Length: 374
Image (cartoon, rainbow, N blue to C red; front, top):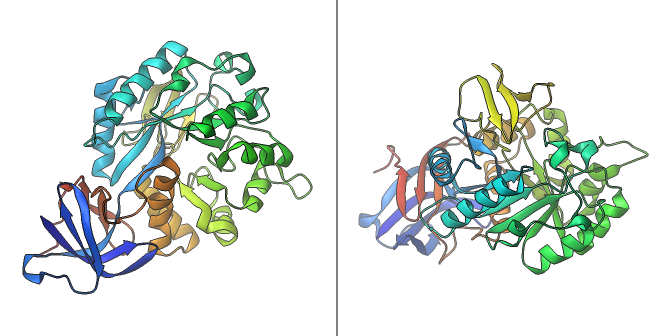
């Protein structure tokens, strides 16, 4: 039994409280003084549900499509940074590589000690005009057939362009299975986006990126997403993908719907240099950007814990708001336990007042133990 006492983030509120943890789960939570002060461990910092990243392509020079061992190492790197659950993101690639990657993800997702929580399929159903670094020759339309790996029960999130033939029907099919659908890499009109929402789409993938810019007479995907309500707004707040001024605008308009995602590339947690991701050469530059040979952004070099701090610095969000955007909000979208509630897995982070992670627990076991408690 572990009894932790400190500032606790629960149901959007940060206050003095305590958690009792047994057999890897939260069995009791309360505010104020703990029931057994002598048995308690007092934590200096804020205790939050662990971070949840819905979009991870790789880290440390390895891709999520490099096999089970690579996925394990990526998970270990992210766990040390406070990401207790993540969705390895299979971007547009060959059917054989995607099938093997989804099988490896499914294997790890069945292990409660692994931070791998399921798969995010980003492609191949993307608009070629908004493909970013996705390989054009591998893109396709849902009407031409859906690959078998889409049927895996480990798939939790799918990014697609709803204007493609057959995309709305695929939205409905995925939603019936409980798979979240996100609109991305798209030029869809607001009307088509609204149809996609009605069909089950619940999120916009990396808002502003790989979609037309907001225009006052042609609001497009961005305008629709900001105004729609009930649509989660995925954002890469690394300082390169979206300008801080625009981040402040999003926060003021719809901050409660923001879901921070890293879109971490194989170059995240890796030194500047050249790397390969899904058959595309990318480079991490000295300023932290990750770009293709053509200079287009190719994912990020950041991890989710960094984005919590950057989002807070850029927008003035409270610590509770920033943590919500990187923990409870994405967890809820992915169908995971969304808070440190009774019965939830004891997946948690401890952060300082600036949002920096300094301790991590997964299933009741310290991955990074705090050195500032008694």
